Image (cartoon, rainbow, N blue to C red; front, side, top):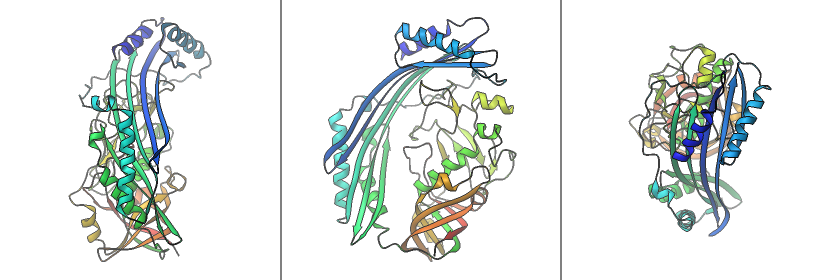
Length: 446
């Protein structure tokens, strides 16, 4: 990574009086393999590198990037970014991040085993996942079995004094299933993630993909009622993704968060503690640096039900009079930083999903949801999503149900959390899953 840092340093050293410069340099790679009926149906192995440069002068920002790293191209990008400043809209909050004294937490986020893992072995893993899934239940067909990995090395330097490098890699497998019974077909999926392929639990992913599909065979449409729901870990992770948008400093600055005036107030049940912790190496999106080169850190957003803070980049922090929480995010050298949660997690409870279900007299285990982004309003909090799952009666899982919606508000759902499971599921997304029990949700069916 020293060559990347040298490039970033060289750009910053060319700053002219009155301008601030940020140089972000990265080298990335990814593999994406899809298997169908034992044959490679899709294969991509890509490598990219490039530099993105921000120049700020008198409140105006210019940005440019290039997908090559030779000296001539880098100089041209800097010149183009300077030219683009004149087209920028004056912004009183424009600026670069500054060192904040927070030390980088050393993490083991790079696996040499993954970096050196042979392509044919990656293909073999996806094929084995397909084989294991087909062996679980004769009613199962595999829609596709997938292996994916990604690696990133980056360096950032600024005229404000930031100079840091970071690297991480990770991988995951996912299998999609179809369960057939007569004229009926249901779908399912299963994941396994790791810092290297040695971390995979292929058998667990195969079993979950089969169970999710076969459980829903014979599903009926339930009656409308208010009930208790138990969210499956994957559904909880999707739910947390919606919650994260309400805790985003940019949304707060624009007046688009339902929690923007509620710091220090109770916004959830007392058992709810929500943290954004990219310093936990078990999280697929763990990192040691944010998108501006500040140290990633563990931020407690909701503590025992009380809203403690929002997540901020340096820009959103300036807009609302706060400091960066190390939550700048960027998609690579082609873009400028935004802000968002990096690795959300609810602090787990003491019991597994079966124990949670055993305490529900009348309810439903929500196995999948649809329409979250169209059916949820992060400003008003209105929540409505299509769902399918299993009925719960007197602590026992019952028959499968589908074609119903669950509805409430985000505010009410957080306050109505009854229990949090201990079954943490690390997923290839920015939130970890865990079973979650929420009371008094409207289930609209027949």
